[in-house]
Structure formats: C-alpha cells, structure tokens
Length: 410
Ligand SMILES: NC(=O)c1ccc[n+]([C@@H]2O[C@H](COP(=O)([O-])OP(=O)(O)OC[C@H]3O[C@@H](n4cnc5c(N)ncnc54)[C@H](O)[C@@H]3O)[C@@H](O)[C@H]2O)c1
Image (cartoon, rainbow, N blue to C red; front, side, top):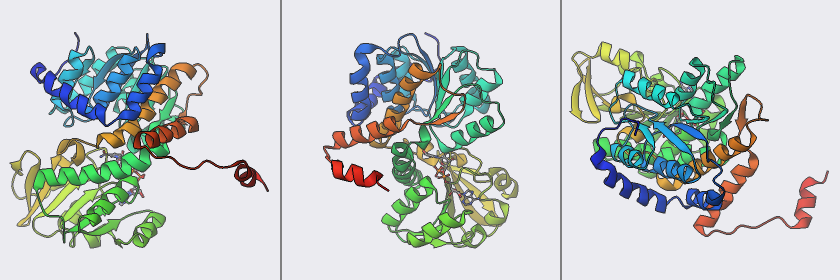
C-alpha cells in the first residue's frame, strides 16, 4: 500500500478518535448516507492536503464510501495526528504524513499526492494547488480550497491568468467562515495556548492582531475568559467594528509594551516584528492562528535573541531579547493545530459538508465550469445550513407567500 506514516500501531487509537468525531459530525454522515447508493465518486481520484485530524478522517471516510480513491498529505509539517494517519492508511487511503516533517519532507509529501494523479484536489492553504500548477496539472479537472490564505493565492493566480482548473472557494461559504474561522478558531486557538502554557487568561492583556473572522473569534473568546483584549488592524472599518464590539484598538507599536499574550490572526507577513519585540515586557507569550508561519517575524526574533532559544516544553521556546524573556508557541505555526487538535468536530462538520458537496458538484459540472475561483453554490450553503439546524433539532420559520411577495415588490 503506497504511503508513508509514523507508526502503523496507532491505527486502532485513530479509529476510536474517528468514531468519536463522526458521532459529532452528523451533517457529513447525512450527506454520505444520502449519496452512498449512487457512488458518485466511483472512479474519481481525490488528492487532499488537509490538517490530518479526526475531523478530516470523517471527510476522507465519507468520500471513500462514495467510491473515491484518495491520497492525502498534511497541510502543515507539524499538524498531522499520527494515530489518524495510521487509521486512514489502514483503511486503504494513500497517506503521506507524519507529525514533525521537515520542510523538504513536507514538499515531498505534496509531490507524492500529485504523483497519485488526482482528478480533484482539496487543499487548505494552497500549497498543493501551487505545486499542481508548477507541474501543469494535466489530470486535474477541479479543486476546492479550505482557507482564507489559500483562496487569496488562487485569486492571485486567476488575476495573473495562470489558473489551470476551476476552484470552489469553500472558505467563502457563509456556513464555513462564520463558524469555522470565527467560533472554531476562536475556541481552538485559546485551547492551543492553554494546552501549551496552562496560564490563567483572566486579567491578562491579550493583543489580537487582525479583526477578520479569526480575530473576532479569538477576541470574543478571550474576553469571555476574563482577558482584557486589544485589537490591532489595518482596515479602518474592521477597527471601528472592534471598538464598537468593546475592544481597545491601537497600533501594534503601542500595543507591544502593553500585551501579555499576542495572537496573530491576519494572513499577513511580519505583523509582529523586530521593532515590536524590542518594546515588549518580560515574559510575554507569542502565538499565531493564521495559516502560515509568517505573521510573527521569527527570523528577526532569532537574530535579536541574546542566546539560542531554549525549548521549555514541546510547544514553548524561550528567547532572550535585551534580558527580557519572550516565549514563542509552536514555532509560530498555527497554534490551534500544533498545540491542540484543531477545531471542534461540530464546526468541522459544517466546513467539510461544504467540501464534500463542492467535490460532488465538481464531479458533475467540471466540463462546463469556467476556469476561475467560484463561490460555493448558494444552494450548497443553504443545504449545509439546513442540515446543521436539523442535526441540532432546531426548526425555523419560512416566509409566507405574502412575505415572499413583499420582499420582491418595488
Ligand atoms: N488556525 C486556523 O485553524 C484557521 C482557520 C481559519 C482561517 N485561518 C487563517 O487565519 C488567517 C485569517 O483568516 P480570516 O478568515 O480571519 O481572514 P480575514 O481576511 O477575515 O481577516 C484578516 C484581518 O487581518 C487584518 N490585517 C491584515 N494585515 C494586518 C496587520 N498588519 N495588522 C493588523 N491587522 C491586519 C485585515 O484587515 C483583516 O481584517 C488566514 O491566514 C486564514 O487562512 C486559520
């Protein structure tokens, strides 16, 4: 069986985690049940580049039971959960992933997924799409993208007229970003910080960089745990929004001497950099929730540190900047996936329901889809919302005829 994983003996542990996640991801299970008899993915090779978590295993197993052949690698060198990788490998998925890949191993795993010659690729961050484009992507008829940073890269390819196949931007479905980016990352980022450090959040000054969907989630959850939250932004409207949501808003250079914990949530590079490190208090904590490890300028942190960083525990490194201790979590990589286990299953059920339905949509429509970045079809977004409400046992009103008419009257 082609693939490369850390330890096959972990498969049974992975199976139990899969079963636990599946029990909380009824929406994906429902889509699987509705479509299983028609085997819509039979004959399709899918290539996945996703964080290998128990929730991802629910998506993979659902796609597999609809007939797909699947190869998967991890969307981050540090985020793969080895038990889940072993479980999937034992279920006939070509898995190329283990926790703690080097940068070159990470790239090789992506190449291995492309060597599987997938027809549809599902990515989180755009590394698989990017590599597919370097190889001219001859077998690929379409793809999906899970996160904001990945969609940004694909839109850039489209603008440069270099996009080679249609993409469905799953991130941009309302049933994705309103819940995954905000509630999922909000909760799991604090989970990651707490698992890594065990600190008390109440009374701490927490600086949240970026007040997009992820930043809103992190700021709100931190406030809920008693932290005093400051937001930094570059978008004036988001900044007003943060202010009116009850947060302090200031420039990073002003927030640097104030914060006890800093969390980057921007999808941008060098958001916290040398000039900021130099102003920070002793014993501050630096964490990143954005997709790439570029938001905290780690290179300059290494350069200005008086000593080699000291590894305090698996997810904490201590730097020394002018006699002040700065603690970096998870090497500046997505803290919720490296120090914790990523989003809760309930939220990934929404994201992965969008993924599965978008993959099915591509199988049916790729011949006629324009080569561009598409929104998730509105019907899919609505269906995912309805399935979610059903799974929660919530009923909502429907517009009566008079209201439909009123809505559309001039
Ligand atoms: N950790 C996770 O599990 C997870 C989940 C979803 C998204 N993400 C990633 O998180 C990042 C943010 O995603 P999002 O959906 O919130 O994006 P978004 O576009 O909604 O928000 C980003 C915000 O950051 C602001 N910003 C940009 N540069 C800034 C700077 N220098 N200083 C302060 N603010 C700045 C922008 O104005 C914007 O409001 C992306 O990299 C995305 O891929 C991570």
